[in-house]
Every structure is written in C-alpha cells, then in structure tokens.
Length: 238
Image (cartoon, rainbow, N blue to C red):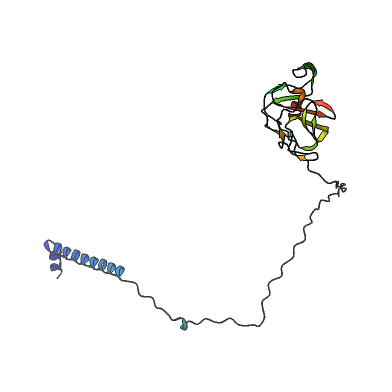
C-alpha cells in the first residue's frame, strides 16, 4: 500500500492530484462568493406594524394636588440716583395784545418821463410863471386820462381844486408822511376819509394846474414828512 502511495505521489499521479485539489478549491470559492452576493441582493424584511389600540400607554397618576413652582427669590432693589433740578422763578408774562402791522409797500404812482425833478436846494426855471423858484415835487409826463395810483396805503386827507395846482388829492400815511397828487382830472375816484392801498387808482392825469400849464400834460407828485418836503424818489425807495 505504501509503495502504491509513493508511486501515485511521484510522477504523473502527483500532478493529477494537485489539479483535482485546485479544482475543488476554485469551485468552493465560487460558491461562497455567489452565495454572499445573493445575500446582499435579498430585500430586507418588511416592518411589522402594530395597531395603536394594542399599545399600552400608562396614564399618569392623579394625586389631587397641583405642583407648586419653586419660589423665586426677589433681588434686592438697585438704588437710582435722581438729579434734583432747582425750580426756576416764573417769568412775568407780557399779555399785551400784538397787532400785526401791514407790510410796507410803495409803488410809483405813474411811469413816464420826468419833465421837472425835485429841487429844494436850487432854483429851477418855471416856463409857465417865467421865474426861478424851488420845486417841491416831480413832474412825470403822461397823456391825459392816464390812471394815477396811490404810492402806499393810507387815508385820503383831502380832495380839492387848488387855484395853482388844479385838482389835488392828498393822502396821509404812517410816520408823518403825506403824498400829494396834483394836476388831475376834475373828478378823482376817491373822497376824503377813504382808506386806500398801495397801487389803488385814485384819479387820472389832467390839465388843471394853472401854474404848470406851459408844460405838456403830466402828474405833479410831491411828498412831505411832518410838513417838510421830501424827495419823492427817496420815499419810493424806502
């Protein structure tokens, strides 16, 4: 028997036996690998659902007493510094009623060429009276019937027919001012006592001034303050 075994393991028998062993090992490895892949591809087991009614949930025990929250310790008050402001003495109230003053507004009573300017410090020649004299106003050229405006707000002081200056309207204003409009047509549009505003029509240019008849039709406009003659241009430029 021993001799047969030696004869098998030697020579060709040895290689046949080795081939069989390798074949068996390969088949075993293949089967093992195949069975593992199949195991991985197998779907997981379906979950088992349990009805809610079958689940027992223990109910809390009723003790009849409410649980009290733990007491909260009160913190000590923090002192706050208060600034003491001394009382100011009451100021005396001025209860004098305030009256709103109208805005100061002046306009030129007429636009036109100046025939004779204001001149109180030098004598000027009067073509009508044929002499040299002062001129307390300004003569502004205009065609007869041209409207004449109040230079500023005021009260009509007088409406008269002056022997030298013809139909004349005089208006009193604040601060002692008086404006005079002479050589007007016979019937002005205002009367004594009327309140007028700046730019209001008070009459029209005429030819009633005998003392200036030699000049072309014009308005004679003059201004006084507290009875003293004032340059009309200075008054209008205030």
